Length: 413
Image (tube, rainbow, N blue to C red; front, top):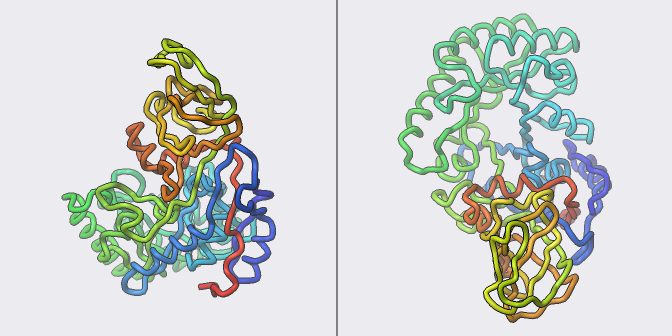
C-alpha cells in the first residue's frame, strides 16, 4: 500500500524528495484488494502525448478527482517527471494540496465559488480561473490581502455552456481584467476555453468553437492582454485536433491510459497504456446444485451443478451495482460475468466446471495484455464511460504504486 501521499516539485531534487514519501509495491506485494498503479506507464503516456503536440505547445496533466482515482500526488510527481509543465485541478483545495505536498510548478484551478480559498490560492501562486466579473473582483481582493498579484486565467464560454464568460460578457470582462492588471492587482496569465464534443470527431460544434475561441483570444490581445498561455484542447482535442493545440493542451483521461471515446480510437492507437489494475481475492469457493439462487433478489439462479466464487469487492469499493449480471472479471484464466447482484463488499461469479481456490486472484480490469478486461470493457458492460469506472474506485481500496523511481537514465524533461 502507498504510504503518505506526496507531491511533485519544480526540479529534479524536489521530485526525488517527494518520491521518497511514496511507498512502492513490488510485483505481487500489497493488500489483497488493491488498485495497482503503474507510474512508469503514466510517464510513458505523458511522453507519448507530448510527441503529438504541435507548434511548441506544452502539456498540462489534469490530476483532479484524486488523479482520476489513481492518487493525485504520486501521479503529479510522475507527470512532472515526464515533462508535464502544468498541472490542472478542479477545486482549489486540490491545488493547495499539491502545494502542501511540495509542488512548485504552474498549477491551474478552475472550479470556483464565492466562498473559496481565494487568498490562500493567490498566496500559493496558483493560477485561478475567472469566468465572470464577480470572480475577478474576488481575485483582486485576494491579491490585496495576500500582498501579491493574482495569477488569473480568463475563461470564455465558446459553446460548452458550462463555466466561462459568454460572448456578450467577454469584452467587459477583458477590459476589467486589463484594468486590474494595470493597477498591479492581477497578472492575466491565460485565456482558455473547453470543447464540448471533441470526443466525436467531425461533430458540427467543433468548427464554431474553434472560431469562437480565436475571436476571444483576438479580443483579449486587442485589449492589451498578453497571456502566457492560450489553451482549448482537452484529451480528445489533443489527439485529433492539432489546430486546437495553441500554447498548451489539457490532458486528463489520456494521461491515465484511457481513450476519451471509442470514436476517437483505442489507447493502443495513440501509444497509451492503462495505468490502473484492480485486483481482489476470492473469499470463498463452493459447489452448489442447480437451481441455487445467487445474491440479493435471486436475479441469477445456477443452471446446473456448478462452482461459485466470491470476490471481495463491491459497490462500497466502486464496483458499479448496475454491473450486476454484466460486469466482466478474469478468474481462473477466463473471463466471467458477475452472477447476480453486486453487494456492498462482494459479488459472485459462476465458474461452471472450472477449479479455483480461496485466495486466488480475480482481476476486474487492467491494461488487458494479460487477458483481463479493461476499464473500457467495464464501461461498455454498464453503459458508461471509462472515466467513471476508474474515478469511482473508493478510498478504502489501497493504491499500490509501481515504477515510482524513474529509470536513472531518463532525464527530467
